[in-house]
Length: 427
Image (tube, rainbow, N blue to C red; front, side, top):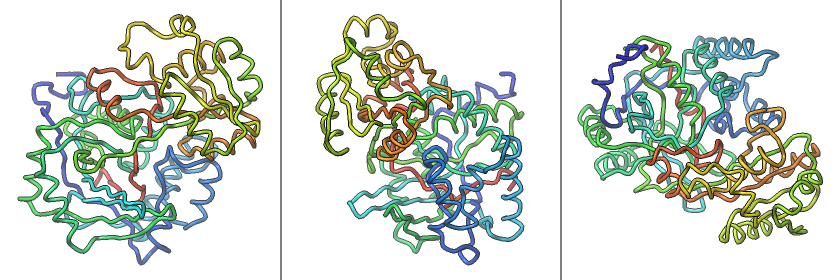
């Protein structure tokens, strides 16, 4: 028995997903369902995107996931008060019975993704049930944990993937033939639909399949680490034994993998380039963003490569000095990890050459939107470091070996929209 009262002997051997009473917006009480949704908290470009979402509707979910106040304690209390107010007003209401929710995202470019939203039993990485592939930043975990404690809620699901055998897929597809609980299209062009599975026989078949599978965290490492922390704080059994997730069968619906870029505050491009002299090859590219990204894609076929931006041009940085890599990259890791662009960025560039702490928000920001990263660097006089995405099979292979990638190495998508279904832990 561990210190939190959780018996290792009774730990589940596979994924244990549980129906729950979802908390959802009453469409009659808000301007539109699209107007109250948001990307996940860590994808919102701040402050521009945050202000845009706040202005979209007074009940936008961003007021819960990214509350604005002068201190962390005030922000969390504000979110808790806002949630209590919306529940009292009937803006958010709980569904009458527990359900697993089928969630569909569809785009005009042909992308279709369906998955299951439920509460998943939280398990330690050592159990091999939920596989992380990235390190986390302690201050972000602490921030998310404080918000969840204050609101007593899981405000947005994290994204997990698994490779199914078809039973759950049949039930998911059959649910999607019925009229949905909600249907909306957000301004990014994605259509979102939600259905509830409440039939005990269907639920049992889904859970029986999942019990034989493990999952990869595609997006939401900090929220999973938060679930682990909160579970350890509360004697079991408690609602904190489970956390809100979206589980996608990538045998049916492969995810797209994109890079997460870095914005180096107060560090001009000229200074970044000067420090690379003799250590990397640097080529100036006076081309549009799309062409610069194509050049980056070509470069990483032969080795490590990055794009620096912020001074009105793009600078392709590649062909690092092999001796430099040998000196700066830890040797006791698999070759697949040692050769990752994110590994070279963090171990060689940030730590050894530029001396920028990867966990100092005053020095570095992590941004998903490529164009927004470049714009912010140009506006603020900083340096944007653009990366090429990693292949999913590399991520999954390292995760199965128990090897975590540098933090914010990948962006799997599409990500679930926040605000379509929430979980109140006291229901």
